[in-house]
Amino acid sequence: MTPPSARDTQRLLPTALRWTCDPAELEFKTTGDLPTEAAIVGQARGVHALQFGLGIDQQGYNIFVSGPPGTGRSSYARLEIERLAQARPVPPDWCYVRNFATADQPVAISLPPGEGGMFRRRVGEMVAEVRGGLRRAFASEAYEQQRAEVARRYEQQLGEVMQALETEARSRGLMLQRTPTGIVTVPVDLQGRPVSQDVFDALPEAERARITARMKSLEESMAEAQRKARALEREGREALREFDAATARGIIDGPIARLKEQYRDHPKVAAFLEAAEQDMLAHLAELRAAGDEEAGEQARPELPFPRRDPYARYQINLLVDHRETRGAPVITETNPT
Image (tube, rainbow, N blue to C red; front, side):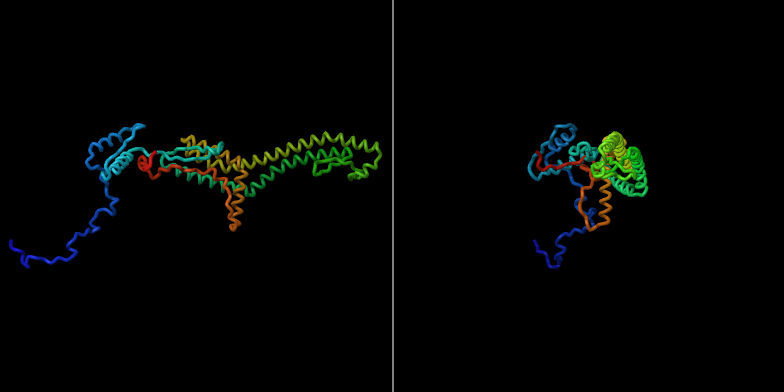
């Protein structure tokens, strides 16, 4: 064989001795964009068995996959399961809400996929609206005036009871005096001034007896007046509590009623909202105090002491959120038991 001559040879540059890939010619950005081929090398019967097992839609069936490492058994099994999961419905979201009757036993609520986060947001907005509304309502001048009017009515009735008792005491030549231990009667002189104990002791025995008899005769009227006074005080406190509750109810009812309407097809949500409303009214003093503290902290930003927020009991604990889920979820447990 004749060796090639110098004229048959060609000089090559080093760059021409290897192939270089131009990224601009590729139709994808990363290899993650490429579809994964689902296959197990040389395991046609295994593939068929896996597909058959995945087609059994019943509880209590399991598939055990074994084989030499590197054959793609784990990757293939996961790809097949994910493909099957895409055709399955998305499971519901799950929330925990407070059980106002038994705090250590929260109530689990399921909602359609993606609505758990919306429910949490709506309840948060409702709580914020109630918080601000209560703070403004109880700080308003109209509230102070109306509450003072309620208190004045009972104070007037109480004053009338005491005035009637004082009139009866004067008709008996006595005077009522308030002491730290209660109301006592003392005799008066002709000018209507109270008689001291020394002057009383210096009176003739018969006169002292007559005065003592008049004082005892007034005791029954005093007991009746004190009974009426205590009843009026109780009624007054209850009237003020009811006035505060009515004021709060006017703030709370609207936001909660709107949520009830939005979730009228979810009995557990409606029950939670109803219980939350009753709990707000039952803990109104605590909620009002939180509003006062919040206003005070805004005025004193240099004292940011952490405090337990009573409104936190109405927050929603979103446990399972499927707003981004497509199909049924696939869970990989590396150490199943």
